[in-house]
Image (tube, rainbow, N blue to C red):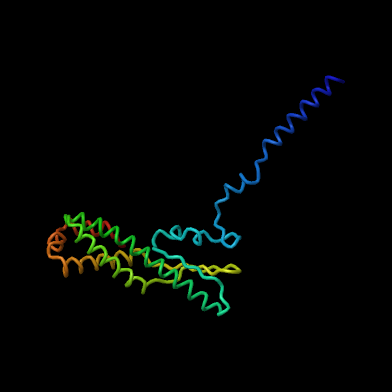
Length: 194
């Protein structure tokens, strides 16, 4: 009987240890939850990480608090913010690619590279915003989220056109470098289109 009690007590202790070890603290469980939350509720992934939306698009995210002025007013504010973000995304991506391309054509002057990159990226952001469209809309009780975007093919085609115009019209030395087949191949590589 005493032997059975010892076995039973040992089994109970082992069971308590196993059960105690199998439960993780609440904070540890929450630390692994990387889902997108907005206003305390589960939200579409694009509201937290807009760049994960589509590989073939450049996107911008905007949000606006729900206004007493009406749903249309709130949506327009969110779209305006999203378009500003989209312009920044386009400008940043295109400027980096243009700088890489222009340097690859053999132009070593930092001033020329910066001038061409800035001119092309600013002009391109303005032109492609006209072709942007709303891709997603989501609303919580307090906030409206809007995702706008434009196809990378559209951006790349416009970028190539702007680079050729910029090289031809403004930079004689750059245009001479640019006319080589290697430069044109490099342009297609930096700004691929279908």
